[in-house]
Structures are given as C-alpha cells and as structure tokens.
Image (cartoon, rainbow, N blue to C red; front, side):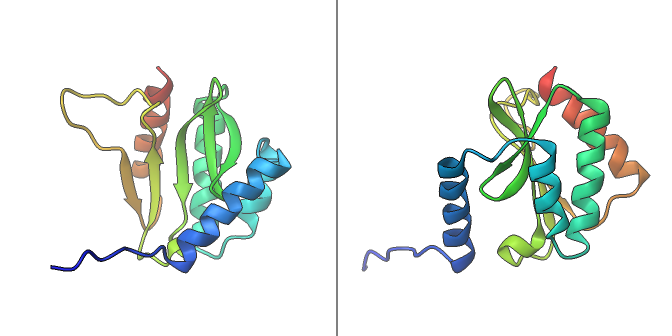
Length: 137
C-alpha cells in the first residue's frame, strides 16, 4: 500500500496565510477588527457571526474579540476559548461555533467542542449564552 500524503485545500492554505498575516501585523485584537471581518462575510454567515458576537459581548464581557486564522474568536487571559467558523470559509454546508481546549466545557470523559449552525433562533441564542458563560467559568 502506498503512503499517500494529504494536501491542504486552497481554503486551508488561505487560513494559514491569514493567520501568518495576523501574527506579522499584530492587528488581530479588538472589536473593530472582528466586526470588519464579520461585515466581509456573505449571508447567512454574517448574520450568525453578528449574533454570536452580541451574545458573547453581553454574556461574557471579559472575553476579548480577536481574529484567529481569519475567523472571529474570543480569548480569555490571552488564550482563545471560542470561535466562529463561517461555512463560506471552507465551503461547508454549515457554520461552526467551536471551543478550544482552554474552554471549561468538561463533562466527564467526553463532551462536545463544536456545534454546527445553519441559523440561530432564540433557543440557540440561549444555548450559546450558556456555553460561552460556562467556557470561562
């Protein structure tokens, strides 16, 4: 059996380039930077990212908005705890709300760290608020 090397997709390469530019520029933090990125997204990603931003800001004002691999993210004490991956970024059928290992979501030996999003209703807003609060608690 031949050893096949997996290649990165164009979208993955672009995300890495964005991350390297974020590091070089140092301009990755702040609400203005994140809102600018959100406003560049196509719908429905833009609306969902705005809602998530508002939920995070309202429920966990201590989290700092920043870009992370070109995606809106929120950090606590210098470490990213959650991020929004728009469906358009990797041409997937749904957006993702993800949590890093720095988020305090532990539940026994197994717990979810990412959630598929196609829209955000009042029920999802409540669940997202709960998760972001728990992530820093």
